[in-house]
Image (cartoon, rainbow, N blue to C red; front, side, top):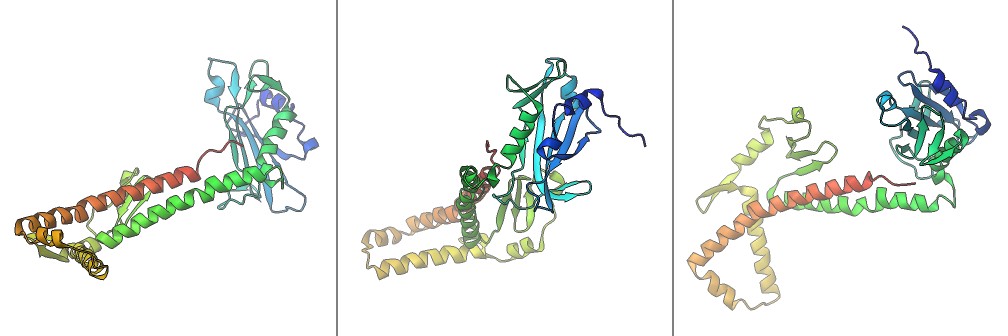
Length: 308
């Protein structure tokens, strides 16, 4: 196996950064890029387990494009457990720890002049390195990081919580009305009904086989006005109207006009047909859309790009 030789241009670029002066170590070039290297730094001497890693990278495809000599750095700052071959990604975010950040269109490198820029302003390597690291550790500042920590809590925890709650309420209402358990996972754009994936961005995950639970559900059907309908729906429909009847009796509400309406057999049949259609079709459809809507919104809010 032949080791990838680092380009002279990348060596010169690294020479613009005073890594040791600012406490950075393990400066390593990327073997799959003309321009690319990474470095590490400890947040404090007491932190023997975790480390910050910062990588500077220009994809070869971007580097070789001829439209402009000025190329945007793809810079990534991460924090986690230090391993022999990298950094372990965190499973949970502690808002008092350094942030995982990405910079895609803020800092630039001119491959002809080999100068560094922030926007249109020329900067030094140390200015670039310290600004990236400063934003990376901003949440660790007791006072200066207070606003950012509050902002992160709002978007990552406080705002998504009521959206998740509304999604769960819609989920359990649907189950109470129809007996269906419906969930939606935005990441895979996946709908799950009664334990079976019915729609997914990954088509191979969809199982077309009939589940035992669905077979049992179909067997529990009874005749209702000449139609076979699910027993669960009939029970809910009956309980709903019994509840209305008890409430009317309890509060002694006058029902003369209602009684006149239901004394007409034709109107009674029309009411039953329309109201049951609403309970059986319209309401479940609406609740499924709410589950999907609030699940999607919750995910998008929790993963919103936040400017530091």
